[in-house]
Image (tube, rainbow, N blue to C red):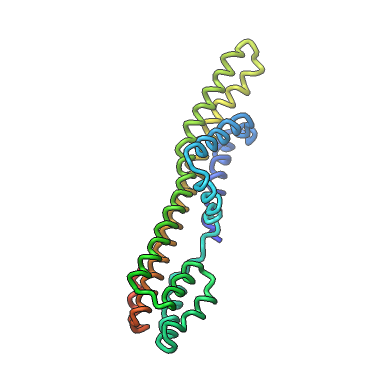
Length: 246
């Protein structure tokens, strides 16, 4: 679990509410149902309008990566490749078929099966690179969903502020309604800017970083599998893959 992400959310929200209280404000002044409906509902609607259903589904699927990123251990991956290399040198490439059955990662299982089937190295690269690139693009589009909502949120907040001011202007004869109208106007702006800069844009950036790390991990494993096919020495393979750790 990425505790740093959780800490970032807590610190950001605490800073907003804490700063408000230090200035003499009250917590309830930042809690406004009408502003929340306008900003969060409008932002979600704009994001859904821009994004395809497939990308929205992928965004939902990868959102937990913000706090629980995939466990792509580069050191463990190199150890796997070296182990497969030693196994293939002893039992031949066909001996990797059993290793493929035991491999939980679908991408690596597919790669091992291709190697065990005697597929040409150029074909192995071509097949696995297609999967790597498609998965990267799909995941980046999922992250893009949060990024586009982060772009819309401040503008939706301004719309909420304008609606609040309209409510105020149409009820000048009713002093009791002025306070709620003005509160909606300013709180909506806070919600829009805060949601964009404290949540949506950081989430999008964090997800892009996780996707890039996964891409690098799969690229490393692909290079390792090709080295196994070529029959390279396990020590040479480890030295070759160590470059991904720098």
